[in-house]
Amino acid sequence: MSWVGERVRLRGVEPEDWRAFMRFDEHVSDMRDGDLVHPPRSAAGYRAWAEQEAVRDGGDEFRLAVEVGGELVGSLSAFGVDARAGRFGYGIGIGREHQRRGYAAEAVVLLLGFMFGERRMHKCEVSVHAFNEASIALHEKLGFRREGVLRDHEFFAGRHHDVVLFGLTAAEFATRHPFRPVR
Image (tube, rainbow, N blue to C red; front, side, top):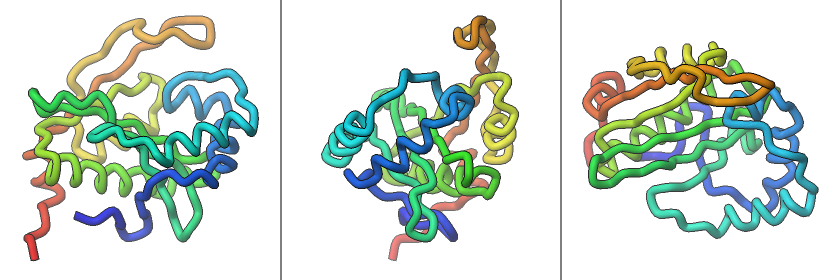
């Protein structure tokens, strides 16, 4: 298991990352694609948040910085871990100026390899806003299967929106990305 891919490196969030995270939140559409729109936060608020993330120990639920060539390009988080059932979810956000370069796909494969290969998770479940065509295409490319649609599930921009549910099992992942032998 490695936290480094061909171009992407996953690492812990550092306190000095606050400026990049503040920059990522400048675009409302990017916030909405990833989750939801948050009210503006001060620079001090971003600094405090990054300092908290840098020392947070969430066990199997965590946030990682996505780095390319020493530059922070986004973040990835694992959440909703159900150890009994072996399920988890994740979220990823790549800064606007770094999108459409394959960084998200590579980062997600690294995360899935860890969760399936090291944490014994059985299934990853992801929810995507139905209008987020780029995210839907990403999950289909990664081998996720559509498992359903939650109609009128999320409210923002003055109306309700559908959410597409995706799932991927460890076995399905391993057929595309076999686990490396132990050395």
